[in-house]
Length: 289
Image 1: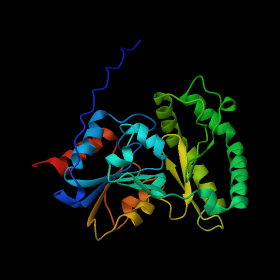
Image 2: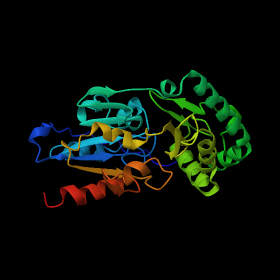
Image 3: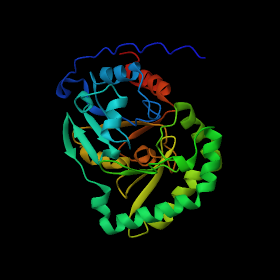
Image 4: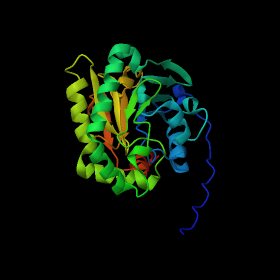
């Protein structure tokens, strides 16, 4: 058996300087979460949480991710996340916090209305059923023990948005199984194909006005048009924040970070994982300081 992982070092928290007193307070640095600050569904390393604290001594700092607030809080140091960052944009900013206070929240069901929401769920169920054989094949390649018929939570309803998971989120897969599925899915194109079909049936050119993007290692993020990560920028005044940097891993077309990465409001940085994020941040914002 592999040796036990050494215990995490305790985090050294830093008292935050008020935004008005920070030397570069008009610059906002935004980070995606999964794949950028942490392995999807895993805790961020203490060095990442400390990096956010240290950046906040000079700059405004925030996160924007498709995951819900409780998930983000659990990944990034626990309670009081919304008070430990200047901005927390959960579910692409549709559930938004500034300085610890909630500033926006609206659900996809409110957007669609009950009738369209029911139609979408029914159509999704049919599509996933049609892809079941291929999904089962990829699941078996990723996990010797998982069986599609024994799994559930193919549609996860969050506070504001939803996430489609072709292989189901319950029972929870291990970190290794999730990574293995992402690899075989990238090669086979299952999620990409589902995104194309959903876009055809429920996308911007339909009455549903929904957008779909590959998110994390096993899911597909679903939100109304305009509710991609650029949604969060409506809460970021250009008069207050002259420069906005964004770090994300899925910055390619069809990835969850694409729209905000390409936005004229941001300076985009593509990363490969949390270690790369840390390295790039050190070089851009701490070198020579």
